[in-house]
Image 1 (spheres, helix red, strand yellow):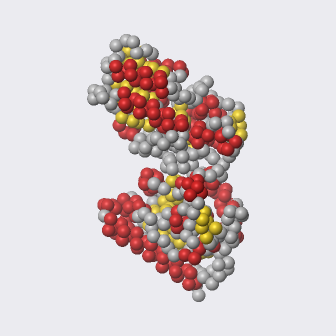
Image 2 (spheres, helix red, strand yellow):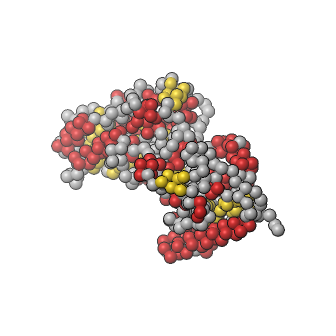
Image 3 (tube, one colour):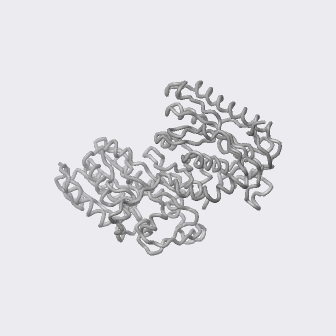
Length: 528
């Protein structure tokens, strides 16, 4: 039977933790001090401002008194917000150690202090819990204050997906960690996410968007990054290893916090922020105008995209803004009623309004985990294997297909038994024709672009030029019929398939260019 001390933390959370621990069949005693003989300690770092001095003192006392099991309640804020966060981050993702965000750096240092204090004791078990934002009535932490006020100061053009955890679910995770005494690091994530704006609507808070530069003058830039970017975490490890899953979703935790819970079920939202209603609304307005009237897209072969099941769509991206991907999305939604997700470069979520546009259209950061997420759900995965340098191809080489920077799309198609559907567009390179370049280091660091592009309109008038587009979806390459899943581990096979896809696309582009007589007029797919 365990004898447990619960140290630190806000009173409202600590009381819940003690109550849950006293209900555990493996806990004989639970108290708020370290004086009595103990074998387990739970340290609740203050969520608004963790004290490293207090933490060091607690860890030293625990280590010196021979306490064998320690549960440190840290924070998912340790991962640090940023454009490179893929979403639903696992515990294997490196935490913020570079000091770019002071809040993340403090949480990282807190965990390091705990690990150092118990590193010399092989008998000790240190369990670190990293919960999502925990909502407590009257809490002084950022999210409790943001979502309880009548006026919420936010950022324009950023509507990230956030995770909100009920204090009762945090207490349940702590109880499970004490019962298992497993050691290790575990995220504590609620089921589902909620967009920030939807969260504010649910609580009745009025949103006041204020530019980040202005708010930064008040010294809040570090905290603002947590409502600027999505930084969601995965709770799969704690569910798999400790058998714990929160009982409430993010929306339910918020309803409980705000007193807005009612007979209607809590709303559900896409894990990565895709909004099908948003896509359909833009499909009736902006995307329809661009597709049907501005670029007059001539379309062929959209029926090659499967109406059901998974597939990998492999495209060629030109024009340094992802408008060809947007038009491909529109064609598939309109023609098939399906909503593909495209893997994107981090530069597309760095800037306000572009962040909202791309994420609500279903763009997700390019990484193996996100590709896996899409295909496991039998969805359509869109990739541009030339990478960002393909989008920044000089106009003189616009329709020369570049080297595929990575062949991971082939591996994913093989492992998940998905056909590969190549697609190409002729005409999109003319909307932002890159005629020259400037290699400014500061610009590349700020934007993550390979260079500053010189075009007839950018940057003085960052509007795309009109042209006549021709988009063709090619015959699917059914690698799932030709190879077993194990072929994904054979480098030669992967390279051969990648080259086959590239050759197919290059041949289609060449044939389309031969038939094109004007960059502004004419059709190339009509029978002659």
